[in-house]
Length: 92
Image (cartoon, rainbow, N blue to C red):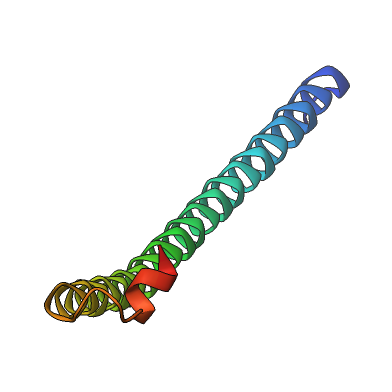
């Protein structure tokens, strides 16, 4: 027969083990949640960066063509007689 003191010790030990198990499970859930949130944040940042690069690549391409257009207008203005105004002169 188990004494009262021994039974209390066994119950306390079992309760402590269950509590330790629950804490370990919560810690695993927290780690998994943090990992998933970190991965999602990295994907969102990378998607934003790629989107920004793609949009700015288009803008700089059109800016380069606009510079090319402006240069051709300036070139045309240099070959025209001085009395005629061009759009390049009006843009200055």
